[in-house]
Each structure stands twice: as C-alpha cells, then as structure tokens.
Image 1 (cartoon, rainbow, N blue to C red):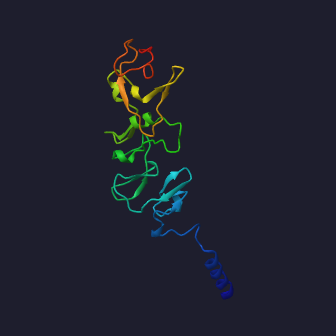
Image 2: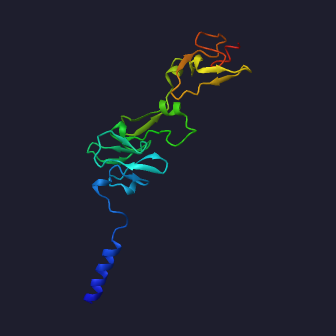
Length: 189
C-alpha cells in the first residue's frame, strides 16, 4: 500500500496537478490569447488573437480589453455591464469600439453616449451629433476633396481624422463651406 501511495505521489509530481500553467505575479504584461492565461483575469487584446496580460492592480474607472473590463473602486477588474444591467458608475457600462472591425462606423461609435442613469441601469444613447442638433448636415470640409479629370471627387486619404463642417446642405444655395464634392445637391459646378 505504501508503494502504491509513493508511486501516486511521484506521478502527481511529474505530471503536475494543475489544469494549466501556474500563474504568478510575473505574468503581468506577458503575451496572452485568453483571459484565463492571466492572473489578473484580463488579456488586453491589441490583435484579435493576441494581447498582453493586464496589471493585477488597476485604477478605478480604468478600462481594458477594448472596454470589455473595467476597474472597480477596489482596484479589481470586472466584466463590463451591458445595456439594461444594474450599475453605480458610468465606467461600469460597456462602450462599443471599432476594434478589429474595418467596416465599423467610427462616427457612430464616437457619438454613442453610454452611462449609468438615475435608475442605476446602463443605457446607450446614439444621440444626434452637433450638426444634427442644429438642423444641419455634417460633411467633410471642401478642402478635403480632390477633383478628378472626369469631374468626380476623390476624398482625402490623409492618415488623420478628417475635419468636418456643419452645412445647410439641401437648401439649393451653394454656401461658402459647401462644394460640389461635399454638397452636390446645392453646388452643381
């Protein structure tokens, strides 16, 4: 019986008795693919299938892994809450991102306000942008287009957020901020 017990102890020692790699404090900022690979429980993705382990201690309100996690008042990571979930702070509520989604409407994401309302529920408001609030249309500045030989317009490819203006496009008057590229309804030439 002692021999069998001794062999079992050796087998457990050689094979290990954990279900995966043992996590230590040194795992912070190590490469990861899954949240379970990190002692903090958060793999902060910078690619669809690759990330770095988030720090174990975090600062209240901090977000990680494309807003999928937030840091609570105790400095611990928590899964972000979705619309309709109970909350106490705005930062607890998930705010969508365009991470790894090339077809994402960035303007829609930027205009989305996510908050914890007076009823302590996460809400999302895809409210109107500043132009729509004035009854105007948001368009690229006219200098952000290049006309082509055939008379069509080519939008700037500058690697930046392109500047926009609010115009009264559709009133049949080609105003100073409008051109045939950003408001063809009003500016024919």
